[in-house]
Length: 238
Image 1 (tube, rainbow, N blue to C red):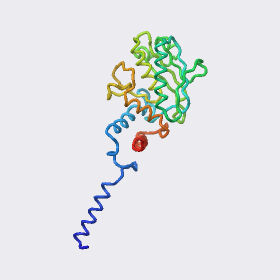
Image 2: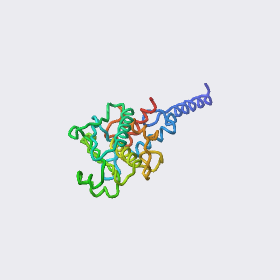
Image 3: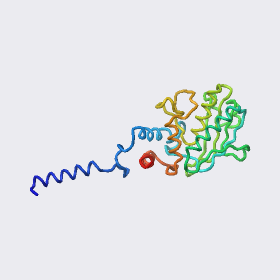
Image 4: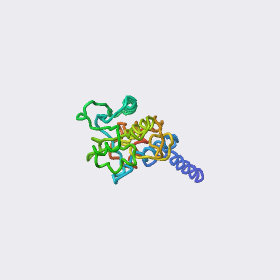
């Protein structure tokens, strides 16, 4: 082999190695992810890392135990049926053992939904008294040292919101209580849309966010880089 052919051989090897190199995650480049899957990962990071208010760290948090819900206040039959629908959808998306159940005794619950006025909700939970005037729906969650949620509460103001708005607020606030706690202006049809909407269904991308957060490979305490790596692994191997 003369020098010219030898140089061509080495250049070919270099080009081949470069074209087959992996990215920093140990995966093949993002070309293996569809444009939609890349959007899902970006939106997941926007919605799940941290909270809209406060100074909590920007990491994933989720329930690692059964979410036992008690509904108080003055719930209508329509809202009770709507909650059953929401919880069934969430249970169908979760694959890590997480489950939402409705209980009839508040002492057995770890999550309280109040359907009534903001003033009555504030009497029960005085720490949110300064928020109810400007919010027709609120949620509040507590987590432990492992960043697992262990209790929470929320309300929907059925005095100010009409029936469609009530269903929207019930779905939005409860879903955010799962650890999808932030809003975004990106997708108008999303339940996490930051501008006021009255959507009462999950968008396709919403369903993907719920199923990925409650996927066995996704844990509490992941930062942005770790989320990026884990979600790429999941989506590429599905």
